[in-house]
Every structure is written in C-alpha cells, then in structure tokens.
Image 1 (cartoon, rainbow, N blue to C red):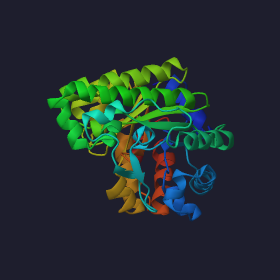
Image 2: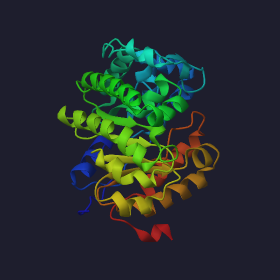
Image 3: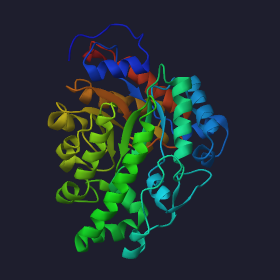
Image 4: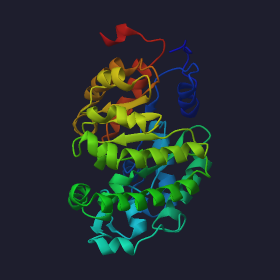
Length: 358
C-alpha cells in the first residue's frame, strides 16, 4: 500500500473510493450495514422495511444520526428474485422473509416461468424507489449499494434447496435451466438498478463451501456469477462485492475468478489465510462475529474481535473493510455498534500503529 493520510476527515464514500483506486486514505473503512436493525431505531415492524420506501429511508437516516454509518443500501432480499418469478413469501414482523410457496415443484412448472418485468416484477419497483431515495439523501457522502441474490441461492428459493441440490446430480440439465432463468432475471433487474448512482453486491449463501463441493461450485455457481459480474462491469459500475456464507476456504480462488472486486467472508474464516491466498486479487470484507460478538457479546468483546480482524487484514494488498462476517442481527445492542465504530477509528488508522495491538 502507498502512503496514507494522517487525518480522519474523509467521508465514507471518499474513503472507499480512495482505497479501491489505490489513493491515500485515512483509515480502514467500517461497513456497518444496519439492515433490519433500522426498524428498532424508528419503532416499526421489520416487515415495514420490505414494502414502504419512506420507512427504509427514515430508518437509514436515523441509523446515520445514531451511529454514523459508512454504507447503506437495499435489495430484493435473498428470495426476492424468486418472488418476482412466482414464489410466495411470508414477511415476519420481526425477522427475514422466507418462502412459503415455491414456484417450481416439478419439471413442468419451469415451462410456465419467464423473465418478469425488471421494474414491476415482485417488489422490484419498491427496491428501485428505495434506492433512489437513499442516493438522493445520503449518496453524496455514503456509498449506496443494491444487493441481489446469486443465481444458486435464487434457484433454492424457486424450489426446495434439497430438491435443487439433488437435481444438480440427477438432472443437471434441468438445474442449469433454472439457473439460466434466475441469471437472466437478475441481470434484467441489475440493468434497471444500474441507472442509479449505486454500487452492486451479490449475496450467494446457498453456494457455500459448507453445502457444495469445489466442483459443484465451479459448474453450477461460477459461470452464472461471472456473467452477472461481467454485466455489472459493462454497465460502468466497476465490480461487485460477493458474499458467501460459511466456510468458503476451498472456493476462495473461484470466488475471485468471478471478477468480484471484494469478497465478504464469514466469521469462520481466518482473514490472514484469505489474505495470503487471494489478497492480491480482491478487497477483503469482514469478519466480526455477528451473533457471538455483536449480538450476545459486550463492547469489550466487539473491540477485541475488531482488533483481531484488523491485525490480520489491515495490510491486505487490495484493501480491507472492517465489517461483520454475515448479516446484522436485528436486536444488536446499540452499545456494541458504537464499539465497532470506535474500534475502526482507534485501531484502523494509517499509518499502522502496532503498539496499539499489544
């Protein structure tokens, strides 16, 4: 890395852009992607954040006022592409939506499906409207992203994941047809989202190394993820970040092969090992423990976890972003969020001060 500024006067957007472009920046970015925790701040149901763009904006503005967030965004959710294709979702008042009825239950069901309207399908219009509002109110200083589910994850929300995994072995041609439809629908939506001043992210939890093998990822996930990343690049959005849950050690190189600029890694991963393997190819993001530390821990636990992450990855050749290893728990104690922000400021400063870590 090159020389760094000695001051902490950059906006979150300036900091990330400088890191990605190799220019000097003041400290490690701290990606607190508040998500559904925003419902607690403004006193609404989590389900409201899935339908009312004004509530999304209100929640993110309140989160910024309370914590000083360094990123914000919106997306259709892990099952949102599948919803637009016909799966029915249930939206709990205090939890993430999940599939209540799958669009594909047999081979013939797939014949009835086609790429929906990229603006009107499912809740696409809600996502685009919310993203536009976030850009308008926060986008000058805070990066705004639109996150889409990866095709493998969408396939597992179009039909039961266990059935889809079985078909990758017993009926691979059918599995690829589902992935083709999922990819085409995702790309159609991305082309609409890319009209806004947003970056793009991909969450592909079902393609975890915990669930599928290296060869399965290479055949059923990599080509479609690469196609999506290539589309994002062609639209002038640079490259996307990619998050995959669980133990992804055996597929780090394949994740980098997608062309993603940043890899978000789960807390079961050793950042130092990831740095040695793919750190010269991608920005690393992570990986404070979401449940054990942020939700169940105390501020001192958060500080300890953040220090360890920074110690291992602060000098990643392509850059590093301090963040959680996975989704933000809705009921995370506010004092723990403040502790993470303070740890980034105290220990993430450049030039690096090793004495702070002793």
